[in-house]
Image (cartoon, rainbow, N blue to C red):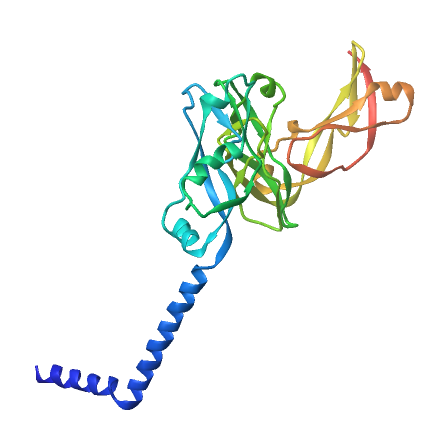
Length: 325
């Protein structure tokens, strides 16, 4: 108890000493002048742009609304008191668009003049307030009666892994989305594109969330997809692939020497484990031999599997023999 009394006495003596008393008086008049300055500042007239939420009401359950603007901006001119009360006093409320009023005699596209909504905004303001500007000039939205279709998602952008890696696979989840729109608009939509994405110089598998590009007059569900980019280490490999004859007449057999050719290529390690010689097609064309007779037949690489590059044959021509069956 004595310790507490001693502490209180020390604090009191400190605060009311002659030096600290002058400092407290200074702080008092400083705060008082600040209050007077604030009162004078708030009594001035200001212009302030205020965001007003926009809501569409009375929408039937079987109607899908798209491209609806959810905010309008109005510039209010008034005393600082009232503008501060409007912004910080939770007096900004949404304005409402009655769907049944503006959807009459409409072909799926509605346009609401901003002036029609100003009446609701005025009710939030003081009597001295004036609205000097409003944006946008009109609120547009589209609607449909549940018509929809499923379309694929198309990736837009460029992906370039590190030099020793390649893009083994791209997974888009979901790979298709539902588009709601009027029948006229749906007929023109064949796919939905992602936002443009660019990724370079990466080695590990990465996953990104990509927004889908908006389509005027349509609502896309979902509006974003998950994209996973799988990388693999590049390796130079080769396989012995059998040579087959092509365009041979009935009863004739083409034999080549050697019967196989080495195909070298670059691919990912994981992809190489899945490759087999039959995944490649190396042929000798009988028609070439008839048009350009030679001691050797030319070889043609007709098909290669997905995910390989820089494909080369160890020989472009080989000895051959045509036999009758």
